[in-house]
Image (cartoon, rainbow, N blue to C red):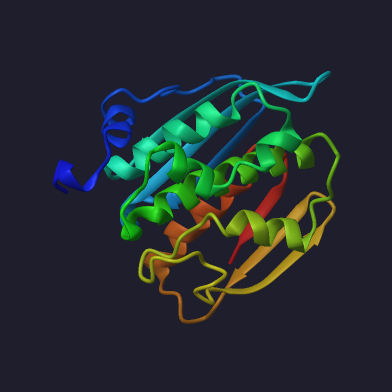
Length: 203
């Protein structure tokens, strides 16, 4: 894309992303998006359990300049905030901080902030603050994109059912999903729930 599409702030965060990298001993992680669809974000959070503040946050990102810049700004806005404050980081805040994004690139800011909220939810589930139930699993699957449709697998109608029994989670795909896609989606579903010590079955 021509650089004329983007503000100076977008280009700055694209060429000099803040908080890029990974945290090996992260307290919460999240993967959202799909390399096959063009945009993929992985977030890593370190959280002080006493204050419930995000003391460190890093990201790995695949995609366009807007995606990298949006994720960079999202990490900047979340760093140092309490979990409750970080939940209120909106994609509009990211767009504003970047001085604007082209309309067809707004989804990059939505992806980054959705990833942040999902990582926080995973931490809350990990620490017993929220329950791992069907609704939680469905929320995590909102970050798994259908490579054929380019939207999440729930919206694309690829999920037949979700069952949660304690630490066991069973996700059944619809019968129209071919074998190759089923393998891709199964791996993505497991990664979406990674770090929660769940026994995940995808069929």
